[in-house]
Structures are given as structure tokens and as C-alpha cells.
Length: 109
Image 1 (spheres, rainbow, N blue to C red):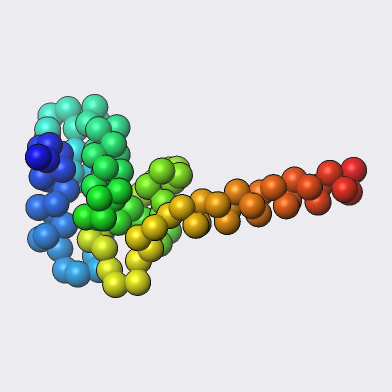
Image 2: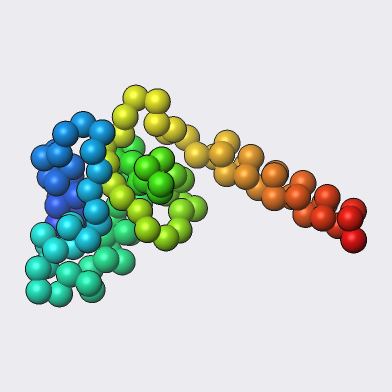
């Protein structure tokens, strides 16, 4: 079962050419034109849920990002061949790099 916001995301993505993305603001405006700003947090939450299901990709700087760890401005598109589908390895790798940087910074002090 999907929400009206998820339906709007999926229908807007179905209407754009493959590989093209949409702005979350356009989703909010489609669902509630008068008070779309209030929906932006809900659009984000529903987009994260769809991304975790593998139905969409969340993009930052035109690259897919981990739906649990992204921040800031983002766009949405349908997944493409070659997009990451598992983020656990990426998360662990980022955490390991952070730990190494912290250790090295401690050695320099």
C-alpha cells in the first residue's frame, strides 16, 4: 500500500525519460498545491521508504546515495543498472575511513 505522496513520486518518475530526475518540491506541489512547503518533510520520508524498497534512487550531486545517511538537497529518479542496491558495505567503509582519520589525527597531536 502506498501513500498519496509515494503515488505522486512514482507517477512523476514514470512520466520523465529514463535517467532523468525530479525535484521533491514538484511532488509536494502536486499533492498539495496550496501548502506544499508543509509536505517537504513527508516527501523526504516517503522517498527514503521507496529507496529502501529499491523502487527509486535518491541523488546528491547526481549520484545515488544511501537513503539512511544523506543530507541536504536531493533529487529523485528511477534506479538505473549499476546503481548500488546494498548500502551496508558503503556505510561500514565510510565508518572505517572516519576511524582511521581519527586515529591518524590523534597520532599527529
